[in-house]
Image 1 (spheres, rainbow, N blue to C red):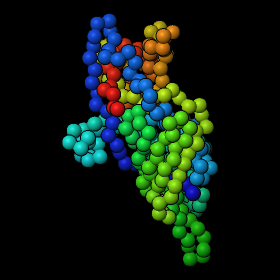
Image 2: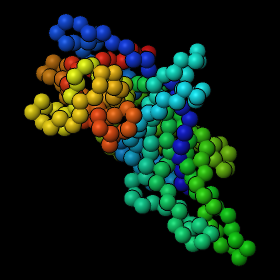
Image 3: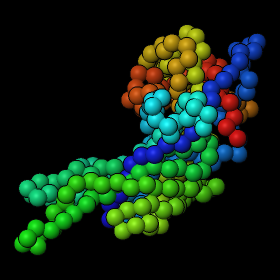
Image 4: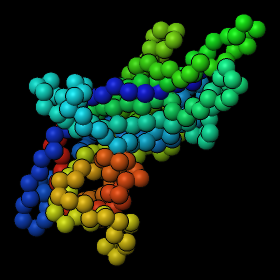
Length: 259
C-alpha cells in the first residue's frame, strides 16, 4: 500500500534581544532535552519502502484557522515531507489509459517546534476495475496521519485514516540519529551574510534583510560546545532557497523556548 499529506500545528513565537558582545539571550538557539529532528532516511514499515524525510518551507496564510494559537494570532509553522527514496516512483497500476501515475510523496506533516507529535496527510494510489476486470489507478488520494517520535529518535509510530479506515503505521530510522534538537526557527539580525561553508572566507550566497526567518538543521561548535555556525534552511522557500547555507551563530536572534 502506498501513502501521504497535510494538516497543521502551532509552533513558535520569535523573540530575541541583543546584549553586549554580539551574544543573544541564549548562547545556543538549540534547546536541550528536545526530541531529535525527524529529518533523515527512514523505512515505511507498512509497505517496506525507503523514504527521505526533510524540512520544508513554511507558509503564513492568515485565512488558515489551523495556523493560529487559538487566540487568532498567527504563528510560524514547521513542515516536513516524506519522499520515496526511489526516483521516478509510480503507482503499481497504470491509469485507465495505460499511463504511469507519478507517486513520489509518502506523507507531509507539521508539528510543534522541538516536540514529538506530527500531524498531516498520507497519500495512497486509489484503484478501480474495468468491465473486463483490469485494475487501474484512478488517482492519488490522501487521509490524515498522526505520528509520534520515540525519545531516542529511532522510530515514528501512530495511525492514519485511509480507504480501509483507521490503520496503525510506523517508520524505522535508517540514518544516524541527529543531534537532540528539532527544527529551530530563528531570525536574522542586520547585515547577516549566508555563506556557502562555515567560514567567512567562503562564498557569500546572500545577505537577507533583518528579520528573515530561517530554520536551523545543523551546527558547528567550539571546544566548549558553544554553537559558532548554524546550517540553515530558508523558511519560505526551503532547502533550495536563496537563504540556505551557513550563518554565524552570533548573527541570529533565537526563538523563545516552546516548552
